[in-house]
Length: 326
Image 1 (cartoon, rainbow, N blue to C red):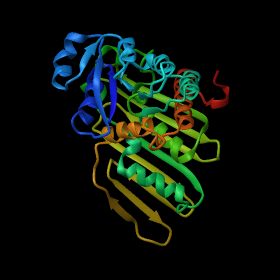
Image 2 (image 1 turned 180 degrees about the vertical axis):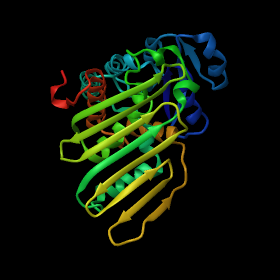
Image 3 (image 1 turned 30 degrees about the horizontal axis):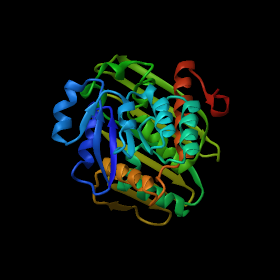
């Protein structure tokens, strides 16, 4: 059992705790850190862990074996580096950082310290996505030509907080909430991006946003791609990979449609899982040396490089090459 500390006890930090506390045999939380302790005190008591206000308190606690970060985005890279320098494994909610240089710095700190790093891209653990990755990597679709993804939900207005409306914390409308999951999926399925061209259309600002993000991709391996995200519509997820022998489409958490040349479409449905518990248990396995975290450090950096290029393209109104990021 991995004894962990949760840093940040807002809406999402509480979701992470609820996913594993008294439910997992691999990870539990014994310490919590919140800048608003009075608001978190009842929750901490109900889940049986002590509460403090500073990350240092958790790092200095000899019973704490690993750190889980659910803090504002701009803090992630510095906190990952601080945890790594303390010699403890670290799990960081998405996005790992807001620019590639910070992601590289965070990953490098973990590599130097010899500690594993996990990132909270829980959609990668959905049964539909695990099967999509397996099918694509098996070569069954032939040469991969194109990838499409769409992820939309209403969380920006349903769970609004001031920092989530700060362009320095959450640039690019829905990119940090939904688009980042598609960038992670694209990294796993199509590899690193080479060039990105994005547009943002807004008709009403937060806290009840009406906006859309559309992104075109050119990948290093010649694959093309498209991403879409809407922050004012019910939840919808689709990732579709097209090859010269067939295509595979993940729909939501549990459904995959396989379309092969000369055959009728084949629809598979999988048992749902708790993806938050799955990602935290995978992190616990990495901390214990049982298995590598399923998302590699290279993929983590590629995802943030694509994110930074998307934000720059939205700002500049034109295409951005990954190689031009500084």
